[in-house]
Length: 637
Ligand code: SF4
Ligand code: SF4
Image (cartoon, rainbow, N blue to C red; front, top):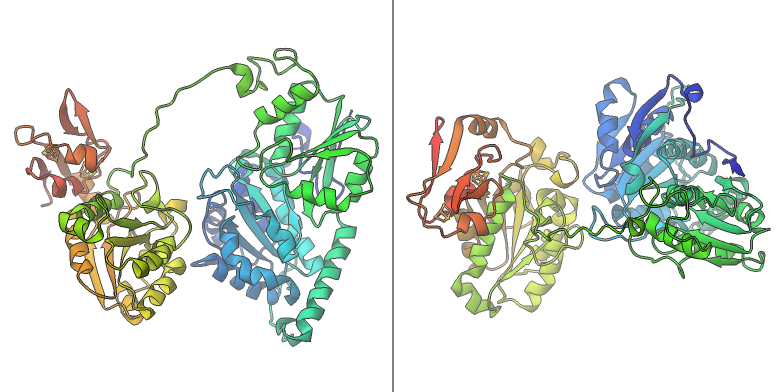
């Protein structure tokens, strides 16, 4: 049996032993591996839009910025970030662009044409993917962007591999004069391991922009010529480069092919089932453009090859296309594994157990061992299905309470004819997290966007669109201006919690205070701006009623800091204020407990109490209680 590793630029499957751990080794996760690789490759410029699972990369780079010679651009969306990085790269800077998979949709416009510009400094595009949609609104397979953009795609299989791929990608990019994509799934981005760092001793770069109309004014005959030249450069790269590793038995007639996170799962399952003699495993790291040579020599002695990968079957499709008529073996993939969800070890284990007629308990990973599968263990856990909740002291809780109250008022029901409720247009971000108070949750700026269409078709329908200030600056601003231009009767709510809280509390323009929201809204033609306190749900309700009577676009600007980013005043309140429920006054209406649903309000022996360990002293519950039963013992009031 063999463990033959990738031929160029590291193996992506380093086994660390006492003897090969150098002084440059450090323990880190996939996010740190990306940041450290960029530093060690001499990155000069970084831009990003935060998104899980690669939301910590720029935090790591920012924390170390004092000792490193690179600039960081915290862009307001991925389109802007992509263009900024291209600009830096055209000046000769090694540049890093970071975003999550859905961000690639926003950056697709510039990236479609990035290759024809013949960028100068290495440009690496790191994309966090999310099969299984753990932290996204969908598990879109963005692999298809690689052939659409015609850009190389590297897919590391381990945390060490992430470090090596990102570092290598800068060289590849300069060599091929095109950006290089590196996809890192959540399973690897959040995994930790020892990372062997190999910093490069690079000479300092000097930057300049060289006028190059032949490549940078890409129109007419130049567009076709540049496209052709780019494809030729990509083909040259394809024939020169391949990154793969071979594992287990080269004489085996059964083969498995993996990429990214599926490598680790398959390797572990093959080992635990004791199938190392019956299987050879090929892991492909440079998945686009696919150099088919490694597969062809791997497949020569095989009778059957299974491509095990997440999502749509990108690698299987490429293999079948490139190897068509050149191999005799059967090639399977998505006829065995589903195209939805994240590939898991139980699926591989079940398939291989069936294929090799292994009965449960008849292998090294049988019940009770580390390698045993979910199906082997036969443990069924019945978890109660609970609605999620905003944090204690979250400004969105009382805001939605105020919105619900407004939309449930009888006069609005009659107008809309909706029976129970008006419509709440939802965006993505922390305001749309469970308990899912909005009526949809799709993509950035879907709040204003979809609501416009509904508002035009159903002008009498009670409706408010919503979104955080992060989403507003991402692209909502243009959407709102479009609604103004089209004279749509629309009430839009901006939840301004002064933080892009969903992805790790990155700053938004209202955190820094550089943008005057009121003047900005006025500048795009919004005539009615109602500013309210997020913790006063009655103000929210009144503002909605007022706005519904006004024609055109109205903005309700709901202000209240994220509970996890308190300002000095909030901290002082937390230290000096106590809230309690006066049981003699409480009428048991449950509004604070069942409707507001603050987790700090708890039931003990049928009486309601405020758990002061959890309570953030936001006072939202005070505004909700119709009987003034919630009281404040306040040294600061
Ligand atoms: S109990 Fe009241 S004051 Fe405390 S966090 Fe909850 S809503 Fe805010
Ligand atoms: S809202 Fe007031 S009256 Fe109603 S249950 Fe809560 S504390 Fe009691």
